Structures are given as C-alpha cells and as structure tokens.
Image (cartoon, rainbow, N blue to C red; front, side, top):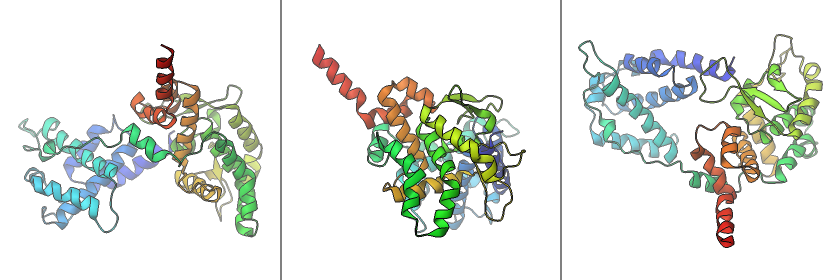
Length: 360
C-alpha cells in the first residue's frame, strides 16, 4: 500500500465535489494515468483560478462548483493576461515563474480536454472555444538553470558523511543547554541519522522513504523495494540499491526501533515516531521528515538544505562515479533530461569532452 498516495487520494475525493461537474469529469478521465498527488495539485490550481474568476466578476457563480462552461468559453486573452499578472503580484504571496508556468499548464490540460476530448450528447466538444490554446507557456525548468540554483545549497563530497555524523553527535552538543531539545535528540538521533543516511546513500524521494515497510528491506543485498513516482501499478515495487554506509545505519536503527518507539505488531512502517500523548509508535509523516532535516540543516550551517536536496546531494555524488543512464535508473527519472541537472552540477561531461579533444 502506497501511504502517501492513499492520503492524497482521500484529499482529492474531498476537494473534487467542490469543483464544477466538468472538472470532476476531467479528474475521472485522468485518474488511470496520473497519480492522485498530481491531480490534487490540478484541483488546487483550478480552485485558485475559479476564485479569481469570481472575484473579478468574470463568473457569476456564488461558488466554484457553479462556474459554467460558457464562462470559460467566453474568456478573452486580456483576462488570461490579468490572471498571470495576479499570480505574480498578489499580496498574500507571489508565485515563482516555475509555479506560474505549472498553474497555466494545469489550465491548458483542462481546456484541451474540454475542447478536444470531452463531448456533449450531440457529440460536439464541451468547449467550443479554447482560449488557453493561444497561451504560450515557455519552458522554464531547464537542467542548466536548476543546476545553477542548486550550487552551494547541497552537500558535497565529505559533507555527506559529516551531516550524518552531525545528526548522531554534533547536534546534541549544540543543544546541550536545552534539556527538552536534548532529550528529544537522544530519543531520535539514531532514527534521524538513519533516514538521512538512507537518502544520501540511495537517492530516495521523501515519499518513498515514508512508504517504506520492514518487508521492503533486503539488508544482505543492500536493496529496498519502493513504489516509484509515476508508476500507478500498485502490485509492483522497484528494487533500489543503497551503499554500505546506509546498511550499518539501518541495522543500528532496527535494533532499537521496537523498544524505543513501542511499535505494535500491526505497524509495518520502517520509520516510526512516538508522538506526545501516544502510547504506540506510528508511521512518520512526510511533513515530519521534512521538518526534521531542516532542523538539523540550520544548525549544521546549511540553511538551504532540505530533504529533497539530500536526494540532489546523493545524485551529484553518484553521477561522478557513473554515467547518466545509471544515474537516471537509480533515481527513478522518467527521462535523462531530468538527470542532466547533475551533469551541469559536476561539469563532468564538459571536462571529459575537453580531455577527449586534447588527446586527438
């Protein structure tokens, strides 16, 4: 069972009834092909758009559910321009260029479905005019640009092990005057270091870490079985290998998992937490792991480090010893274009090309 996917599916089911009927139809159409997490982001994007439409008087609906196809069909280009401007300048929090691009892409997907795929009872398209077809969405998330943003914000070389060691030992010294923080650290440092070590020695996504069960671990072969992003087959888990360092940390954590976190037999999760007021350990949440890494990163002197940047840190280090195709496979990327980020981060391909040229 993919825990995060189940959570997002439940949230999707909660939010969908608040959408117009044609959006619910679109979600049902896409559900076999896209993950609930992706569709949940779509629904949130539509929620923002419909709220804006109503606030601007471009829809007479009193709720998002009442927005009509005709109101979408009669939108003008200047309205879309105004919406883009709203996304980049709104007071309650502006959006990055990448976020704006994603929100517009979500709209394009919906409008394309309504105008090109969905039909009414007379076999005509539900949407006769598609204003979003005129909107050019420039590709922003280029590997080279992503690499430039990551430089200096990830762990490099010996820092990978230094960060794990800091969680084990250094953080406790930094908070020794704070009895509450020190007690919490003593309770959780082995687990926390194990999580960081596993990501830094395998490149797992945080959602993949959250979903791990005890049965997914093969210590002898240094291998895990995980649900990969984009794979909707609930019967298949992908084998992912990890380095020997992570094996040692996993063994150490597993020795104390049961006793320290009072884990009931029914709880199969690998990483668990014993929350305040609780008598039994439960599966750690994605948010808890994210907050935990940020806590250690700030004290370590890497305030920009996040749990996802641990994955980037592993990938950059791994790419130095392997080619782009092995790196793509290890990380579970859909295409090598995503993996190109690490070529730019290491400048490996460029330096090798120069060396090859000098030998000719």
